[in-house]
Image (cartoon, rainbow, N blue to C red):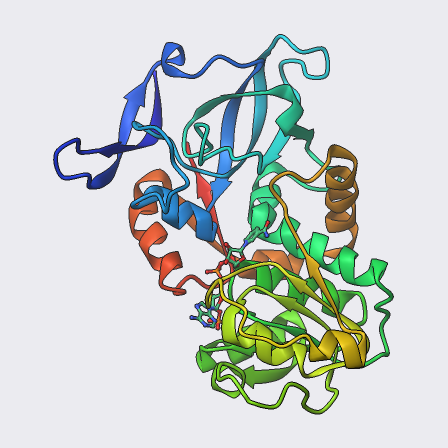
Amino acid sequence: MFDALVVNKDADTGKTSAAVQQLSLDDLPDAEVTVAVEYSTVNYKDGLCVGPGGGLVRHYPHIPGIDFAGTVEASSDDRYAPGDKVVLTGWRVGEAHWGGYSQKARVKADWLVPLPKGLDTRQAMAVGTAGFTAMLAVMALEDHGLKPGQGPVLVTGAAGGVGSVATAILANLGYEVAGVTGRPETSAYLASLGATQIVPREDLNETTKRPLEGETWAGCIDAVGGDMLARVLGQMKYGASVAAVGLAGGAGLPATVIPFLLRGVNLLGIDSVMQPYDNRLRAWERIATDLPMDKLESMVKPATLSDLPQLGADILKGQVQGRVVVDVN
Ligand code: NDP
C-alpha cells in the first residue's frame, strides 16, 4: 500500500475534492515502468487539476501531479531497469493520466528521461515543468539570435515558477534581466536571482492604442499573455523575439500585426508537454549547466502531499513564489 493525493468528483454536485488516500499497486494503470516517486512539484496546471480540473482531467478518481522524479522499481522496457533515477514532465501525465502526487506511479517508458547528470531528484523537481519550460524559452530566444549585450530581456510573471527560473538562467548567462511583477514585495527576491530592473505590473497590463512604443527589450519570456503580451510586442527592439510560455494573465491577445511587419518582431510558441525526446535531453543538460543550484535552492519551498489542496488554490491566485518541492514520502 502507498499514499497518493486522490481527487474525487461528486456525481450529484459535480464538485471535486482532494485528499490523501491509500492505494495498492493493482490500482495503478497498466504501463511499462513503475516508479517509486521521491519528489513532485506544483505548477499552474497542477492547481487546476487538484481543484475543479479546468477541463484537463477526463476521468475520476484522479491523481494529479504533472511532474515527478524518482527511482525505477520495475520495468518491462529495455531502456529502464530497477534502480535507475528518472524524471517525468509533460505528456499530459497528471491531467489525462495519473501523475506524481503519489508514492508510486506507472507510466510509459517513452515519457521518462534519465535523471540529468549533476542533478538529484529533489533538484529536478525544484526545476519541474516550470523550469524546464523556462529553459526551452531561453533556448528558443538564443536560436533566434539573442545574445548578451543586446539590451534588457524582459521576464513577465517574474516571481512565479517559470519567471523565477528564467530570471536565474538568463542572469547567469550574462543577460541583463528586467522582471515584471505584480508583487513589489518580491523585488529583493528577484534581485537575488539576478534581475537588475523591476517593472511594476501596472506599467504593462493596460492596452494602448499605439501599436508601437519605444524599442526597449532585446528579448522577452512571457508567462502572462493577454494585455501584457500585446503591450510588450510593441516595445520589442527591431528583430527581437518574444517566447510565449503562459497565460497567467489571460489567453487573449488584443494586439496588432504592426510589430511583426514594421519591426520584424518574432512571437515564438513554447510547448513543454509534447516536446520531442532529443530536445528534452538538450534542455535538461542545459539546466544542469546554466542554472546555478544555489539560486534554485533559494526559490524552493518544501511541501508534503497533504499541503497540496491549499497550494493548488494558491497558485491559481498567483500567490506562490518561486518553486514548491513536494516530498511525497
Ligand atoms: P506561477 O503561478 O508560479 O507564475 C505565474 C506568475 O504570473 C505569478 O506568480 C504572477 O507573477 C504572474 N501573474 C499571475 N496572475 C497575473 C495576472 N492576472 N496578470 C499579470 N501577471 C500575473 O505559474 P507558473 O510559473 O508555473 O506558470 C506560468 C504560466 O506558464 C501559466 O500560465 C502556465 O500555465 C504556463 N506554463 C506553460 C507551459 C508550456 O508548456 N507552455 C509550461 C509551464 C507553465 P508576479 O507575482 O511576479 O506578477
